[in-house]
Length: 459
Ligand SMILES: Nc1ncnc2c1ncn2[C@@H]1O[C@H](COP(=O)(O)OP(=O)(O)OP(=O)(O)O)[C@@H](O)[C@H]1O
Ligand SMILES: [Mg+2]
Image (tube, rainbow, N blue to C red; front, side, top):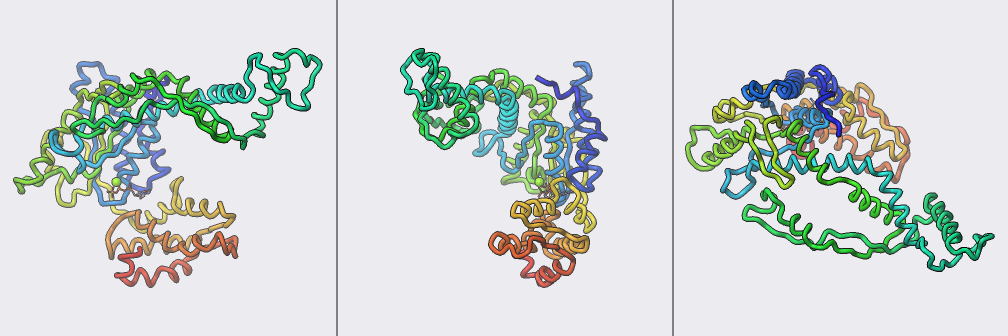
């Protein structure tokens, strides 16, 4: 299986890639790019020294909706790394009710296993489909000598030779199957079911068990076969999936999944400021907050975590924490944890100009999304420059007046702006071309924006 580290991106390549999706926030992009590269560099260092080099974990600091999560998510995507986002506030100290911090590693492994499985399934796909074709054919026209009712139009020279005839019919049927002519016919077939849906809960709740008892039990019990009746096309899909599962070497998948987590996993810890207990308040939930931080230490520093797929070493997992830090400050984290997150980057609030760019430039820009949505109805939606500028301007105003929710404001503004078009288009379709210009935007939204009470609810 391929080794990602061999074609690890350079920092400037990473920033360039991120620029396709995220506007501004250059410092944060640089920081994550360096951190990703440093992880790779650290892995190249000889053992003894490597242990001395601290991992380059990052804290992203900034208000809501300015791209913190988005940067981390994109970083993971472009490096094809297993990625999980967790909320720091969901965790509790070991022994309390709630999730223990090690579960983030288990989640990451689960995601990695799914990633690798999907890749492997893709590789065996065409083979699995061929096998599914054969199995369906066997059901329709069993291959052995059993007498077959010969379909009309296939009477042949060697009519008495049963197996020859059978062969011919199978070929003819195969052709029909391939062309999809049989797709809507019903067929009954066996599927192998995972044995009995048994729920076993551990003392800490299902997700916190290092070893999945359920899986062990079900692998000991015999697999159950179950009859199903569906259309041939659906059967083909189900059977192809089953065949693919058989073709995949699940042990190899799990090994590779763990290797990827250990070498390239990224964990995004959101709302880390919520567990930074201000030391002034000395009792109550703060005790457990600090406990969570202490539990985090070994994982961030590098330790072995048991998962149902095996032991995972967390030494090279990259941690990106994020928070608004309005009340608590990074210095309110326990000193040991501060040391494990040596890189701090602040993200800026977004400006009107940023909004104009966010609306138009990213590959997944909102305006492109809406145009594509309406395009599916045969309607062209065009945004004029004046219209875009006006949307950005109003978003900035509402952010200032009501609450600054960053780029998320663009979503609410656009849904309100396009509400009528989105509702009317399928029935009325009176115009197959809508142009959004500055006047249209202000006509539709100005009164809403000026009325603070209304905009609180709607925009
Ligand atoms: N700088 C940006 N460039 C492009 N899109 C952005 C930018 N900032 C935010 N967005 C868009 O806004 C949405 C919210 O951003 P994101 O999830 O990154 O917020 P966040 O900073 O993590 O906020 P929170 O603190 O609430 O988690 C995303 O869908 C993203 O596409
Ligand atoms: Mg976020």
